[in-house]
Structure formats: C-alpha cells, structure tokens
Length: 237
Image (cartoon, rainbow, N blue to C red; front, side):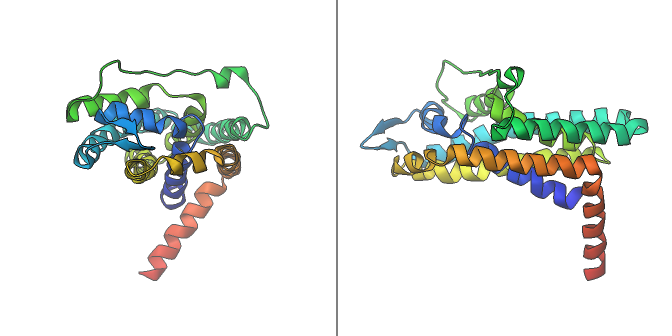
C-alpha cells in the first residue's frame, strides 16, 4: 500500500486544509499563533516569528496525527486474521465518509463538531506546539472525515512503519499549504477571500476523492495497484 497510499494521504492532507472547516479560520489561527493583528487588509506580523511558530504548530499537529496512525496500525496488526473483512469494512466506511463530505449523504452524527481552543496566545515554540496539538485533537467534522479515512487506510497497512508514514504524508499535505497561505496572508487577505468562493466545490472534490479511495480499499484494488507499482519500480532499477 506504500506508493499509492502515500499519494492519497498527502492529497487528503491538502484537501483537509482547504476544507470549509479549516481554511476560513486561518487568519484567526495565525493571529492567535503569532500575536499579529489584521490591519490594512493584511495580517501585520513579524515574518521570522511566523516561520518559527508555524514550525511549532505544524510539529504539534503532526505528532498527534502520526501517533494516531501508529495506534491504528497496531490495532490493524492485532486483527490480521480478519484482514479481508476489516479491509471491506474500512472501504465501506471511507465511501460513507466521502458521500457525507460531498453532500450526497447527511448523517447528523458525522456532522457533530468538536473544537479545542486555547485562551492564551502563543508566545514561544512550546506554546505553538501545544496549540498545534490542540488543533489536531479537536477539529470540525470535515477534517475528521478525511483524517478518519486515512486512519482506516493506516489500520489496514502491513507494518507499523507504513501507518506512521501515511499519517506523516497527511501532515505534510496540510503543512505545505499552511506555510504558503500564511505567508501570502501577511501580504494580503484578498487571497483567502478568493479561495473561499471555491471551498464548497473543493469539499465535493474531497468527497469524490474519498469515495474513489473507499472503492479501491473495498475491492482490494489498492493492494494490487501498490504491488504493481512496486514491481515496476524494481524493474526500473
């Protein structure tokens, strides 16, 4: 599951960042994280502080995501005897999450929202790290659905390392646009307003992406594609 799974996890992280639950809140997160303020249609912030504290924030949510991936892998290893059934259930759940994300299904339970906020502004790398961990520990439903799908993928991986790597890829997928957009917002807020117009469409794309992933897992094609890619890589060598 390595090659294609990593690609799916990375794309899942990117799409999670641009979800309607996270992206519109980015200015608030940045000002809270850096102690900056919104003035003249941009976030007034020391860019060195932005880079430094963003690193702590990213490290914080990555620690939580990777720990979840490791836990999912361990549980999956314990259920090795039921791997086929487990893969089918995981694939079905991912499809349901995708339908919910795309707006084709509305399950109230999956729409419940949990957010954890710190009342104190981030002052150093440690507080930035803790803020990132808080963000990862309590997020809104659309991020939870995408993350849950990647965790289900991690739980069906062959080794603990694969599960950790999958969630590491997911974290990188969220981290790259976070840094890029954060820097852009320190110059102008117009970008976030423009992207906001397309968030509903991105949510549909995310849902369809998850449905496709679910069908691959459910049908067992994910493992076949990964095996084919691995064989092709060895052939190239």
